[in-house]
Length: 184
Image (cartoon, rainbow, N blue to C red; front, top):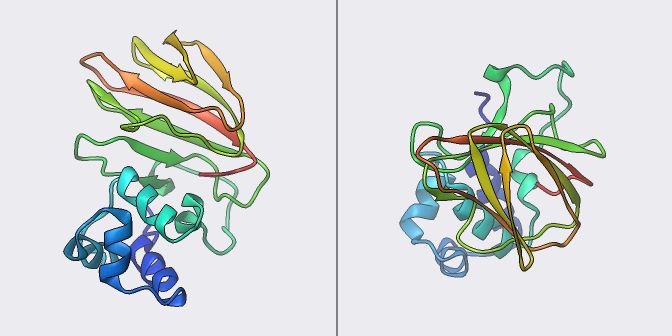
């Protein structure tokens, strides 16, 4: 996996906004120690922690995953930008496009067994189309409706729709999705 320097980007944005470690950690709902460890790249934040930090800094989540121009338009499994911890029971997102500068974003979400993509319903500005690539089934809440997708099924999630994914099985699921405009 490519080193994204997420901690350094958090630190840079925090200092540019003139926010102390203590204040940002309080707004984001994490300890100052955890924020320091993230900024010093001693730990990788979970996707929920990074979302909270991004919200506290009024920055889009994808800000922490942008880079200078890529040399190649090809993304291999070893070069994917990843959010989350692959070796721990945490939701992991892998960027399947080289970056988020285009007009569409292509990602894969891996939800561990008996887990959800988030603790609450979330929305984003872009329209999303998702495809259950692997796993027997996954449940999806969109606004006040519930759906069960089986392997091979796809779904369109309208822009601004509140949604959350639930893997109620004992095996991980992989959901591939595209969002336009990018809002990851």
